[in-house]
Image (cartoon, rainbow, N blue to C red):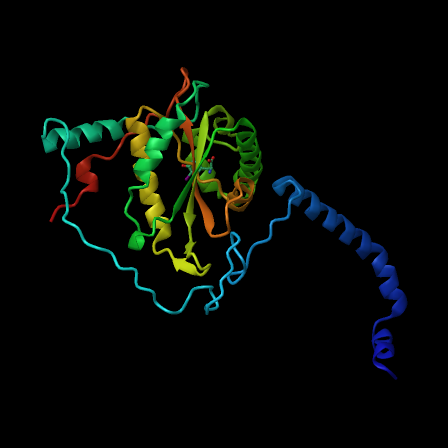
Length: 298
Ligand code: IYR
């Protein structure tokens, strides 16, 4: 008896055929659901995730690479050292006044969820991003990308992606305690600020970089570095009189990355709506911890 006959003998043929009557329609429906969901997220455009050794951004690597796509041979990039100019104290050359003034600026900052339609001068935001780019980073790798979106249609698409995911987040992914903790902030899956704010800044951490030869470059502490840069950006926006909100849209990273055409080494860290608070904007009456509670002196 040959192999095929043996298989047919083992499984009753008529049983398999009768099962397929049910299995086949289920498979077709499952495929349709996956297809429609994919089309909804990525507009039908299939974007392939590049494997580490694959071509990325049109650069192909020709040398030796390890399984992660990094060149195993250390490369020394020499840096000249120059005399340090020293810290600058503005405000009457008085460091106390300068520190207090900075405190006053940042203490005024509140997370704003209702924005007015008052337009923002993009060149101000650009200057703030310029300031954010002065952030320290692991081995000076500067592992960040700031995507500034003011296009109405792209903002609408971003809102669509975020609201679809946030609905699932609020209903299923976030714990009961989490949604209860958020009740005082009056947040939910509806994100009007994503279309009301004149601009959105999507901040991506670059999990690795690319050298000119196409091999990968280590981006040490890329999340910490990008978070520090984000902090500087928030201060700069506040100093320029702009309002902002830090949002971390859970599960939206890949879809937003595809939408903005960012490469696979970039992962969304935060999304900031930026603009001017609406006239009737309200914020929760929160208190900040006194310095004695957050500072331990030795
Ligand atoms: N990302 C959700 C939930 C959320 C989570 C935290 I932690 C907040 O401080 C605020 C909101 C949202 O944006 O609604």
